[in-house]
Image 1 (cartoon, rainbow, N blue to C red):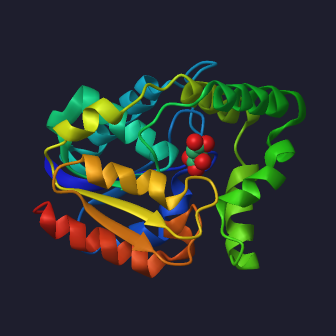
Image 2: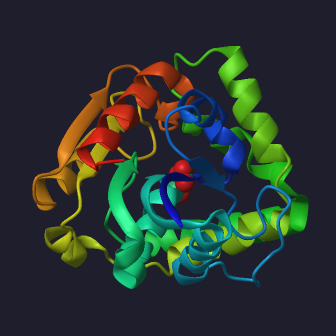
Length: 244
Ligand code: MLT
């Protein structure tokens, strides 16, 4: 068993969103990116992918990789999953990167939107939410960035997208857990995030003891895709704080 770095993807993408970080860091540490159930060609885990089910998938991946502990980096939905992993399996966590995410549960209105997304993709296919997914990138994002992101989104099966949407609607409020996080943690946000505003993500850094906050200027929600080099540099710095 060794220690390593594991990336957890956003909704509705898959492990490929981390390809730049994976290839840049591969020479320095054992690194991998997990596909949550149903995404990236993996098998579905039922009609609702709760954060518990998703965290279990992460544990299976750590076991498969032979990672005893990991610095776990989750972006957005990946962050929700990482917080569940912290609640259930903190013995496997060496450090955290929480990027473009939030600790709060959904409002009633937010839950309703999730149910609508699930119904829509099951009726009309993943394509039906593609336009609304433009908010994943900043207004300044290049065509190349959008082509990369939309290509990944379109390849996800509607059943996986629906299950994750319904699972996120059920996720608990993680704010009570934040003061108890006692591993080195970095919180990343970006000024052009149109889905989770920087102040919402930054609040997590205030609540987690000794957390470091990094703000990436100009990037949208998928900050690691829009600012690959800057994001990778932040993770690399954090790895040394975690002793990896
Ligand atoms: C994501 O990027 O994972 C989603 O924006 C998360 C969400 O819908 O809350």
